[in-house]
Amino acid sequence: MKVLIVGSGGREHALAWKTAQNPEVEKIYCAPGNAGIGEYAECVDIGAMEFEKLVAFAKEKEIGLTIVGMDDPLVGGIVDAFEKEGLRVFGPRANAAILEGSKAFSKDLMKKYHIPTAAYENFDDPQAALAYLETAKFPIVLKADGLALGKGVLICNTLEEAKEGVKSIMMDKKFGASGNRMVIEEFMTGREVSVLSFVDGKTVRTMTSAQDHKRAGDGDTGLNTGGMGTFSPSPFYTKEIDEFCQSHIYQPTVDAMAAEGREFKGVIFFGLMLTEDGPKVLEYNARFGDPEAQVVLTRMKTDLVKVCEACIDGTLDQMELEFEDNAAVCVVLASDGYPVKYEKGFLINGLEKFQDKDGYYVFHAGSRKTPEGIVTNGGRVLGVTATGADLKEARANAYEAVEWIEFGNKYYRHDIGKAIEEAQ
Ligand code: AMP
Ligand code: GLY
Image (cartoon, rainbow, N blue to C red; front, side, top):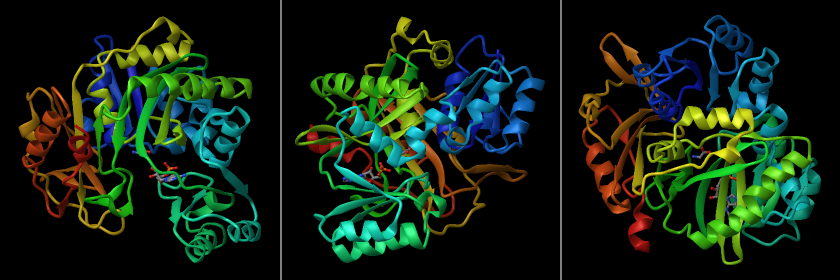
């Protein structure tokens, strides 16, 4: 079978690596891909939003399965475009990807179906939002409704800050059209956990838990980023919490989408906060996380292609997922200055050190092949990932491997997974 992967980040590199393990996969293409993905896949110069070209390519090459990694094409209807032409594609249709594409939609869904989440109000009108703030409790959380590269969330400590936030989201359109609507919600405290799951419209099978580190600097300081590093499993995600979430969050979400006529097939990423009042949903994503995929897929024993096919066919109930009884840590190597301003084009040295080393992986996020070698080509450059018998060992291995890589303006956080040591 030939497989096409849509996207170009570390998540798609991990997806390509995992896909390549299926013996029936004869060829992998990735559009548009990156230098690292090129090791497993032929990179094709078609953008992830160029649906017509992607569909034509998939037909011409007789692609048997397309896996969509990114949120923008999913929300934009890439799955509908492929299905219309009779192509097999893994991911939610646009009417289900709205679970990530509109925070106002997902909050209303949770309210209607009694899925635990922070109390909130939705606003279309900035004046109404400003008036609401006058009687609100602080801190408070403002969220642009639509996709905003993970940056459309503002936590405001004072009324003044919140008023500025409403202005920047709804009036100055700092996050573009995604700020036409806004959610204002209660501020929650607790540990954050990401749980990714496969869904076939009816059945949900959760993967092992993970935790991201979203802020740019050590000790959770600095700006929000796409994610600076992850670990899996989360020691805070206990069996009791899992049981609660399975019956009060995961299955109810899948059932709610089906009841709304928005059957969800693909990956639901549950962003949870473990509060004193129990687990609550922070957000939904309609795809694998990046860099959550890097620590989850490297621990997954089950064949990825088979699970994707079961989701498409609606036969996930006949499958159980299996994970290694180990741990993984991913440290993102970024370009200094990310997420604001950074340079590109520095030669990357040391990539060969990962070859034939079991349990060590270097997933490329932003890299480019040149005649001189592979160079940096983005804010997040590489995701150095290592497994270990437990989180402590995985963390030590990942930070050991971080030293194997050199490039100009290399920047990374030193405390990925440090919370683990505090907890154990
Ligand atoms: P989101 O994109 O909705 O996951 O939000 C990004 C980050 O903002 C989350 O990972 C949390 O750290 C934080 N956040 C979002 N919503 C809340 C909330 N209601 N209370 C506290 N923190 C929040
Ligand atoms: N790492 C967070 C995300 O993929 O949304």
